[in-house]
Structures are given as C-alpha cells and as structure tokens.
Image 1 (cartoon, helix red, strand yellow):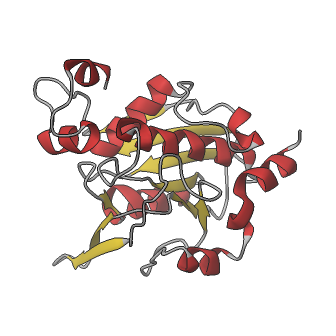
Image 2 (cartoon, helix red, strand yellow; image 1 turned 180 degrees about the vertical axis):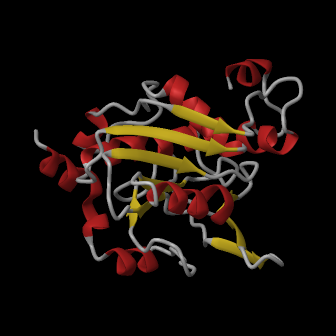
Image 3 (cartoon, helix red, strand yellow; image 1 turned 90 degrees about the horizontal axis):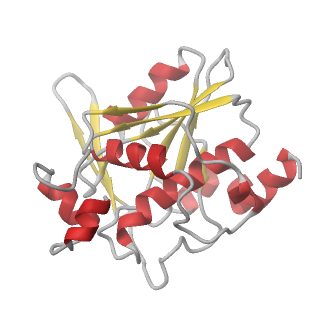
Length: 237
C-alpha cells in the first residue's frame, strides 16, 4: 500500500480546507499559529463515547508581548503543521506541557515549532486529549494521541525521512512514554496508517515529569492516574 492510499485512509475529513475544517471542529487560532491542523481520529476518539467538550483557551499576554495560552477541554486532538521554507527531510513532533490539566499553546508549542521550522525541520505541535476529562483508560489517552500522530505524519506527504519527538513538562512524560512504549497496543487500529511505526528516531524531554512515584508532580499524577491510583499504576507510569 503506497503513501497516498495511507494518507487518504488515515486522514479522512482532515483533507478538507485546513482552516475551515479546524474552525468547524472548535480549533481556535491566534496570530502566528499555523492554520494547517490535522485531526487524529475519524469520528469519536478512543474511549470518548458520550463525551462532549467545548474547547477552552485562556489567553494571557505577558509584559514582553508574548502570548501564553492554556488550552483544555480538548474534544478534537490533532497537530498543527509548521512547514519550513527549505525543508531538510527532518521532522519533529512537539508536545507541550501543562500538568495534564491544560496545554501550553505557545511556550513549549508554537514558538518551538517556529524555531525548528526556521532551521529546515518540519514541525508538528500535538494537541492531545487530557486524561482527566472523562476519557476511558485515562492513563493511556495522551500516548494514544502521540502514537497516532507519529503514524499519520509518516503516512502523510510531508517529506519526512527521519522523525523525532520533543516534550515539555507533562509533555515530557508523553514523549518519554512514546519513546519507551511506541509499540504498546493502546488503541484499536482505525486505518491502514496504524500499521506504521510510531517509534521516534530521537527523543528529547525538557524539564519532564519522569516519575509518578516519590517526588512526582502531584497535579500531573492526579490528572493522569486519578485521585487514588494503585501502587501498580504508579509503578507502571
């Protein structure tokens, strides 16, 4: 099966005009955002039956003029594409942090993508579902989205020969989980793209949440595993 077939099977409705599709699905753009947004799942994401979330974006402008957004209530996960003027064949999936309670839209997200795109690396900022917002199998939800994003990028026509990942804070927990558990079956295949490898060729974890045990960030722990996680869950994640 060639890449064109995989792309068509994997993206479905996301092949509609990017801005129109994104706005129809509750995607909000700010100046500087890429308006090329690819949804991860055809229809309802795994474990999302009965869930209806309205995207919440808290936007604060800092004294230095930078936007600092916190994004939550994510019904439609996907990734924003930042294309370089002179691509060099490298690709990078960028995973923002936010304690699994929200996701940073700028620092650890858009700004990082713009930086790497300026150096020839096509960049993809992941907007992943938050585990404490009602999804089934909450602890695997961010990993489901990260695996699916890697596979769709490899299925798509992005000219990527090598694909890595970088995550920040709780996003660093997602990037670490992806690096270690890229082949872990955490969702049922929904398209031929899911036959592809989700393994990053390189993984970077910036000030990451790397434990759920002693010394864990308490907010990330509760959001990922719930208020009373079992010792087995803590050890596993």
